[in-house]
Length: 462
Ligand code: SF4
Image (cartoon, rainbow, N blue to C red; front, side, top):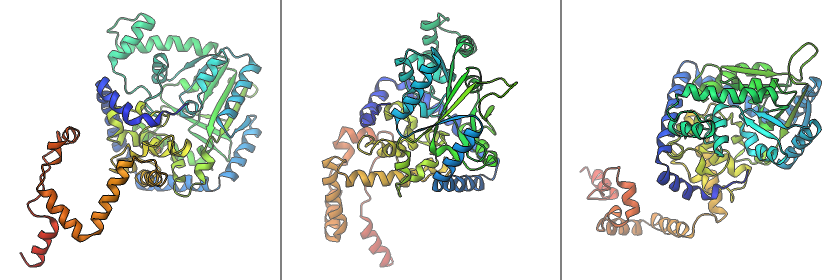
């Protein structure tokens, strides 16, 4: 997928101006997820769960070569065809070969952020394959020709009215059709697709190295159908998705569900162990594509590698007051919100993803929410420091920071400026831009005396 992260500030402003309903829809949905997460975290010893999960992921990431080779061996023993994709083009080549060898005309696809990253749908379409997103939210945005707005809830930015209008135009349903009726229409279309598709495509929440097991979580049952009805299943798996042992799933499945939606466990968990054996129903061929696409380079980055612990649960998006204003589209790349702000510069380049590390108030809510304790605020600062060092920040900001530093380093200058500024009109009275910022807040009123004078009085016993 081509990144348009550079346009973030403009796109965010445009969306707020032109689609004010998005803010309401995203805020409502994320606060709902957030309440559920807090309740679900409160039911267990969440501190110990998170520490344990972090330790397991850190262990895997620091022994990734070993676990990848083990996973490959186990997958092959299970009858799975394993492919390595260092780049997006490698992943495309694998998929193209499968499509051509099997003469695929129709594919069903389970929701997967990695397949968005790889641009799987445009590739399939260019090969003449009719592809159906089978997660209801993904199906909606596919009909609209939009990318997902959220890792877990791709269509959370849509209102019921927008969906009713979409279905009215596409399927002729009444404009006031209730959600149940709309779901029935989608179900009918997708059922037909499940039964006729030659190819099923998925990602994976986890790949267990010890047993070569793919673990997939969902609530709609569409992943189970996508991976079991077509005769060929291709799973794209990021190399960071490994877990060492089967028993690790006992921690990671409920932890991810609690973080993502506040559920104790996802409604459906599929554990895929290879193609169907004699007497079993299921795909005749299973392919696992182990995708790097920038992950090894990120792992080698001593300041940013922790990003790879991410479970793609979306909890940091739900907790983020900045993401909540716009949803994911203005971020201009697959991964949005706090995790996008630190992952995108790592997967793309800082230059390509430049303004994203600034899309945060640094309030720390993302770290509070993250089930694997990714230090997102610290990572945001790392990328910001690098942006300054690489000269990506605007020149007015550099000049302002230089001047600020000069003043802060000199007590005499500091006193002079704090005295002089006190006599000037308040900034919100001068600049309309600042007025917009201060509108919803109390007036900025400096105290009659600066702090250093007050402190002197305290020292004198005043
Ligand atoms: S950074 Fe943490 S909270 Fe955000 S999606 Fe990844 S695992 Fe979930």
